[in-house]
Each structure stands twice: as structure tokens, then as C-alpha cells.
Image (cartoon, rainbow, N blue to C red; front, side, top):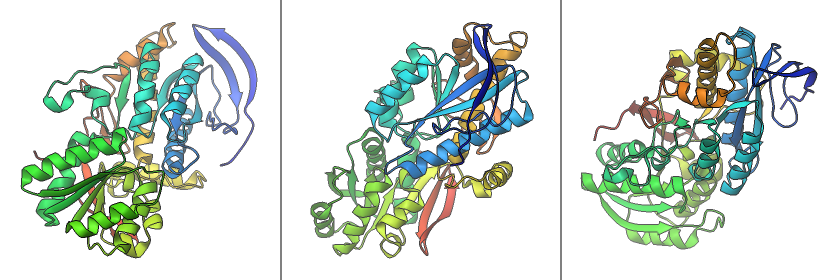
Length: 412
């Protein structure tokens, strides 16, 4: 990270918002104002795992949000407003996420939050943000219950938190999408399903299982694992003896990599399949290129490298000097951040060029009708706060790296 001091030159409170002129870019706490100066400073908070095993994804999210803030300031996209980013580290832990949510709510200059990565962390944050009428836009949460309520699978969909939005499509689509590919295209008929018991992993595995069985596939074994142990020898032995031709893992790459490696080392001739949290070069590193060859991951959207809408983002990210890759959620993080910027613009434009005293509540209201052409395609939200972009992609490990196989939407 490039570190520079943030120099606050003047401070005053006006129109119910923090007014200051600032110069500088990033600080040691992950903040950025993009080097722009202006009248009112609007802070965008960010929560992600910036350290720990999931930091590759978290830093990609942070860097991409930082780029959105810099771009908005450079373009003076909202007249009279300078945007600033403040990033907090949750290490993928719900308790840390909840503490961070409380900190972000306490900063009255914050009018929106990007994140988190993990669905389990989101569960711990939603009520804190909603009570404060502070909008939250995640680039990575995929568990359906976050937006559609705990009974979504039965068709009883109820939105619990009006302040919660996301730019990534849900596991209600991703799990079945993977099952259709595995059964119809990869011709795998006997699945061993494993999950890490977390909100994301267990939910994703459940939606895969339902569609796989519906298609005629047979689930010949299930197992829950502790992702922190990294010793999966017992479950690897079960997989080998089961006769499965595919393993579906609901969880994240820090455990999935070692799990896949140990399953292959046990002699099981299977393809390991997972969701978007496996779509990272880190999975291949942890599993080993040889063991990971042919494994499959689904991820949200189309490969941004193939999207005309992402060309400017890709060029600016490369020129931005970021040390870390944008990873699976970079484009979605940029779009999540930009959606907050768009909502702020709607509020300012609708209030004579100034922020109202109830700016947070107004931003939540404005977010529902936000619509723009983003890095990942058209960005807008449905009645649950879910993205209207339902595109997904299948990737397979080929010659030591993930390569796209096909993109589409779930046809169920």
C-alpha cells in the first residue's frame, strides 16, 4: 500500500454534514480521499478481511473501492462533495464485523458502507446499520436469507433490512447453476457434499444439493468440516471409499485448497467444485497446481476481462499502483462504491446541491432507484435489494490457473 498523510486544513460543521478541505490520499488506516479537495466531505466506509487468510479477496475489494473514490473526486462527479474512504479489517470474523459496524455508524460523515465479504459477517452487521439508517452495499455476500429472509427457500420472501443491498447475485441461483453444469455438462452423477457450517458455505451446499438431486444426481455422502483445522484426512478417506466422481465444497479457499489436495492424495479420482469463494489463484496455490487441475468454481457475473464495460476499470487499476490483484470481487466492489456515490448524488441534486440533515436515510431511499452502467454491466436493485444482474460463470483450473468455461444464468 502507498502511505501518505491526510492533512486536514479546515474543519467546520454545516448543513448537518462535516465540511472540510483536505489533501492527500491514503493513510495507514486504509483511508483515501483520492487527492481531491472540495466543500463537503462524504466518507464511505468499507469492511472486509484486510488481514488473515481471506485478505487476498479483502484487499482486492478495498483497492477497487479506493479507485472508485479517486475516480469520483477526479471527475468532480458530485459537485461540492469530496469522497473519502475509510477501511476497517474484520478478518472474516462476525464479532469483528459487528464491532466495525458500530464504529462506522458512530462516524457521522459516513453515508454508506461497502462490504463485507462474508455472509456470516453481514448477518452480524445488518441490524446495526439498519437501526442507524446507514446504507450497506456488499460486493460479495451471496446467502439469500440476507435479503429475502430466513424462509426464502419456501417462497416466503421478506426483506428484513431496507438498508441492505448487494451487487453479487445469490446462492439461490449460484448453487443450482453449478449443479446444472456438473450434471449436464461435466457428466458427474455421484456427489459427495462437504460444507464448513458457515452461513455462506452451508447455504451454497444446500442449494447445490437440491438441484443436483432434482436433476437425477445421487448424493452419496455428506460431511461438515471445521475449516480451521486444515487436517481433512478423515473426510478424504470417506470421499475415496464412497465412489463419488465429484466433491462439492461449500466454503472458502483457505480450507478448500488443503481439502482438495488431501482428497486427491488419498487417491480419490474426483473433481472438486465450489462457489465464488474458491475462484481465486490462492485456491490453486493451496491445493497445488497438479491436484487442482480440472477443478471447477462458479463465480458471480461474467469475466470482467471480457467485458467492454470493464476496460476503463482494468486500465485504471493497473495504473493505480495497487500491489494486490482486484481478485473475484474487484469489479463488484467498484460498482458497490459507485452505487453509493450515485445515491449521494441523487440526494444532493434533489436538495438544492446540499446534503440534508437526514442524509443517511435519504441515501437509503435513493439507493433503491439507483441504476447505471457499471464495470460489471447494468447495476440496479430489485425489491429485496438484490442485484438485477443474474449472470454467472463456470471456471476450471487449466495449466495451473482458472480459465472461464461458460457464462449464463440459471434456468430452473
